[in-house]
Length: 429
Image 1: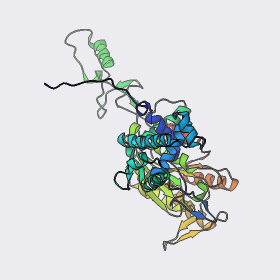
Image 2: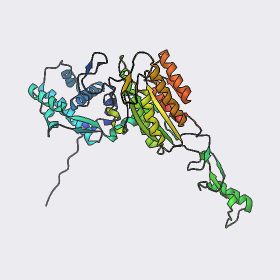
Image 3: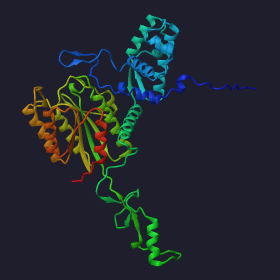
Image 4: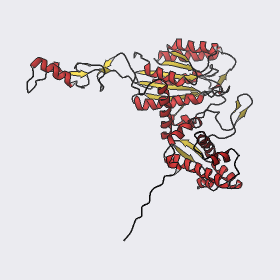
């Protein structure tokens, strides 16, 4: 006869850790907008950093920083990390094992995936108690790359959206409002007599009331066509949006990262559209020397590079993408911080000029803005700088496209974009 012995489960420190809070603390690292291409120095464009921010080693450093800032490490561990401890090998081993378990937990929960490295590399850090072994473990960790999964992107988008809408004083969002009425599912705008073609979403109390007023209270109750009342709701329009993100060098130079907040807004917008506006579509374009459509799954890896600003090609690509969308509304949301400084010539060569507002570049840019207007595409520009000549350029774009210009900062960018997206009421041409 077999016996089974049950013991009381004793949860560990890792079981009590809030992975969602940890992911939120890592959002700045995971959505880093630094120069593309890894370690890179250019005498004009600037310094791009020493480490590959997509490596497992960099992830562990970010995890350590988050744990220290949240106060979830023991005093002995903190002292050891600060170099104030006695150099205890056991404490160092505990830190290494903790980081391995955290990474493994993030992978198991579906937030991250790991690629590269030799089999068993996760155990290498756990055994690193001597300096030589630590070097081997660090080298192994540098060879392993991590990527955000769709779940990870969804989570960061949800958190970003929650923070933005919280700042606006909103707890929920609906669909795009228009001045027209239609028959639908919700019943926020009263009811009306049924006419042929309406959705048969009966307002039963009003229907019965009209029949009783006509026939009196009797059984069976005879309903006639003119008794039928249906719910009247606000018409909900569909919208196709292209989000244009500037990846020129100025988006991260001058001591301010302007690109990472823009990526957070893109993730928040993507999450909101997918969950609240299932009939809408969102595409993302990055524009530097050239414009490129990137899938939303690659948004977290997008980075600024030593590029100029080819606004004209970005608008041309956005227009082509939107013309293929059969939606009630089509719009471009452009986030930038500088003047257009490049265009693509008919030969395919890139013409660049960083000195002031080049007439040839401006002419090509305004031509694309006019083409968007003729195609019925609205352009709303969010400028992250307030230089007078840039303000004049953006105002000219808005004048031609009959769109809006917002001069904002990285702190208020998300609120401006969401307010515009949620509140704008536009007649369908």
